Length: 98
Image 1 (cartoon, rainbow, N blue to C red):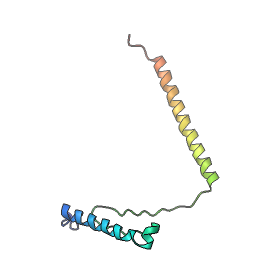
Image 2: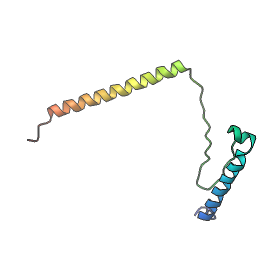
Image 3: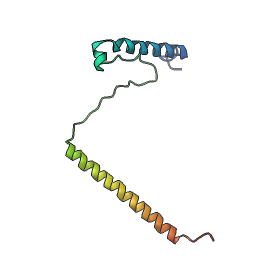
Image 4: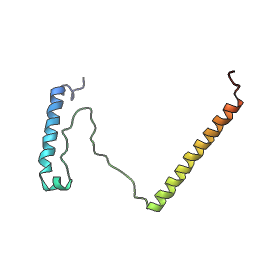
């Protein structure tokens, strides 16, 4: 067992869960909670990664996004049509099981 996990049994996990939920209930009564901003951080548990993700990148204009999505959809449809055509050809070539 790992050193930071030895004391995290089911009881400790349940206590951490209760503490997290209580923190949320208290936060909901604050001004930030009423606006849904800056919620409380949960107690860190061993073996679990933080729920917060850092997103990197830049925003893309909507017209560029739509063009990329249309190109992606066209590629997907083309692959599907090619696969369907190959399966149709395969059915014609295979001998029947009669």
